[in-house]
Image (cartoon, rainbow, N blue to C red):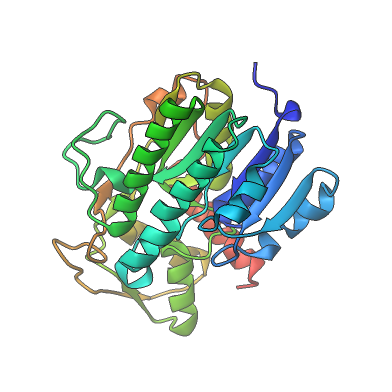
Length: 326
């Protein structure tokens, strides 16, 4: 039986959006937590609250996953590692190939080398992405779908990291859980379609630019649902290496997201201007136009999402507007 109070946990990228929310959950369960972040995209205000509330159990270690000395220090006395550190940008103009290799693939290699030399770590949980599937012809898409053909450098870097983790887990005898995440959204998320639409509408309340043709359709999951799913998998997965999809059971178009944001901002007569996109109406080159994950494997462990995609989008929009004072 897995007991969080008996475990010391490392969260790489712990000051990021998903990592910080996970730290709050773990702290409430009584874990001792090391938050490890280089603050390239993570933010101190994401973890300030948990550091103050659980000062006796949570510590912050600033460092970089590409430096072995930093990582060795971080893993020196932990039982479970949540590896969430990465450059989170999917779009090529925001995340060039060299950076993707350095921050995603090489950083994972460095972490695994530190674990190999410090073999008391029992389990590694890795935040991968639904983009590893690429363009698929089966919806919803299950974990056994293949061949995997990512269309973005980001997706390719995550798939390469999955392979590294898989091999190290078998060779050096620790368990690994790979999380293929849908679009995870929440009040702390600062990039993505919802913050982007809000920012654009604050600049121009009469017109909203929408990348692509608006028919892009994807699954969105609220951050609390995501964190609960991650904990469920860590507690209940018992194979050497397991891969799980995490997402909602439905999907929503970009056009509908735009309509919800406009509604929640109380705006009227907003003109939607579609860029037309690339490669059949995608928002950008490498974008996956349709994504819906099969989560039946995860649900069989007793988890299910509380919010559907549209509910999650509306909830996050309300939160962001409230936090920022609209």
